Image 1 (cartoon, rainbow, N blue to C red):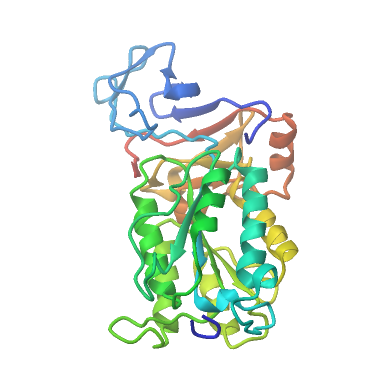
Image 2 (image 1 turned 30 degrees about the vertical axis):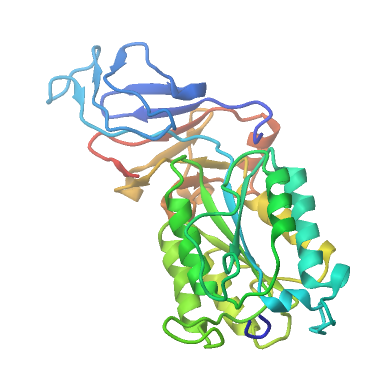
Length: 362
């Protein structure tokens, strides 16, 4: 409550090279591995998740008899799993100025304006983003947040999300901490290898303190929960619904910073008051997570300094690329020339090299 209540037009082949023995593999659609002088004893799971594999190179010699004792991983362009975690507190029935209307504010309510924007942007981007929806609190509860999602993340979900929003009735408290933790637990249980994000949209300060009443403030725990979720490799984008200049500013700012994707402006979260505001914010966010210049690693390298990246056969300095959230992806800055060349198709082959003896942790 307030205050308490397709990514490449020409898909490049991504090559994974085990350079110590000269082993080289091409990742083809469907996870098929090929190598002219190399046989892989095991492949990928149906979901595309990496398995521990031993590779032998018949044309190479080494101290271990020609076996490259390394784990490999797949680096792919994958549509992101983006879970909308939407506040359905009673104050969402008020208008953007905080005015309470007898029987609710109808089309001018925060709920109506925000859900209209969500439906619009999801419909426009459902082929690029695997959208999902989780409401908080759950059902008719004041503070309880369930473990599932009203709409599981998946492709072409606009109709399902619109139906779930249409069936929801605002009227709970604002259990932001529980919503964040349960959203991460849900996403951790999604077995696909796609990058995962939480999009938290709320109109006020967190309450439902653990062990307290629905109105017991829960700011500190909610801020910490966002940091915990980010450390799990799941960043959070924070949207404040008609919260600009309110007492919620400080808390939402800290949550946005802890979530890993603050705005480069003040406030650090995305402030929205109208349908158009939210449409703009959602468009920016989906553009950030659906980067055509982000390559998913399938795990976290045990030695971040041992990984090298090249484009078109040219090894790049790390100043040209960086690790994404949780060190689970390689990202070329969207404003850089390499990303521009990848988008235009001028650059196609991205090679990620992991020396033998190194591995990734799923």
